[in-house]
Image (cartoon, rainbow, N blue to C red; front, side, top):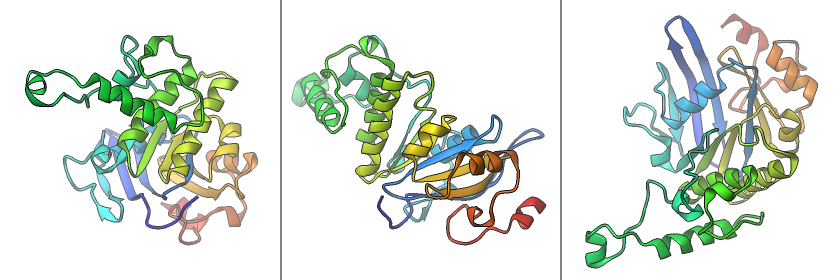
Length: 273
């Protein structure tokens, strides 16, 4: 795992839907080369937080910085425009298109000259670029001309992640990337996530698969009632500590730290907020 300036910082994010407070001052940092698991019970605010961080939803209050520069105040803010891509749970893949066509979906390349002016696509160039992107994965994948509909669940996840990695140069957000996958397919996805981190990307993963995350994540952010209630390193994270933080039970003092990882968090002050 690398260190340096945070890929992304969020401070005091607040988001309400009517009387429902989805986020109540959530804060976090994501660094290059680390895999951070964002966990919590249903309704804890995980999906809302990821949507706010990606720019799909605007917060009511709070600060978002990418590479140390505040960006969240921009009404047109999209994390994708700043080098952070998102892999949503539904993957957004077109089953009737090929692997390379899905990787370039919405970003199609046109040929040069008159053919480009007529809207002719550079299919050869897209296939070559897709093959190069897939070759960086540690998992075996079929050729770029393979229809997406013929791939396994794990391979489809790997394609969706590869598409994000191809266009991202800072980080990747992932929403339940191993949901409904078998053991082998899950390993394909986990290997792909590790590849992302080894390339220096910060990876933020929403997941309910705690045993798997314990083997994969460098850090755990545990959400409860719209806040990041605890920030645990891999060495600190155990199933009892994670579940305790999710349920609001006592967690050993050394496990409670600032959600930014910079200083000790006073649990009594947190309860008063």
